[in-house]
Amino acid sequence: MRVSINQEDFKQRFRPRANVLQLLGDELIGSRKLVVFELVKNAYDAGPNEVSVVLNLTDRESPGISVKDDDDGVSLQTIQDVWLVPGNDHRKAQLAGTSGKKDATHRQVA
Image (tube, rainbow, N blue to C red):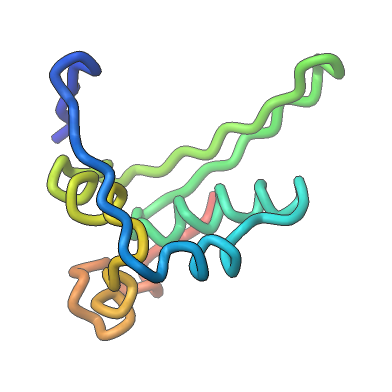
């Protein structure tokens, strides 16, 4: 279920952890090629059944890429507890298998 959030009503605090500068230095994307890779990887990591990647190269002045998946999206709780708290350890929970993600063998990239 997708929920629309009015930008005016959504005001949250940014709460970085102490190790955020080190993490940002390690995680910065150094090239345009890696940006596309990260877009696809992030969609796949979300645990959908399908991911589609569409490149729009017909307009050389304004090329584009669209990465879509059939996952449920991001919950308000995830935005508050993960995205607005850089440096948290949510990845450790995912790696330990506690994230509830679908089994990778049941996913495909279209």
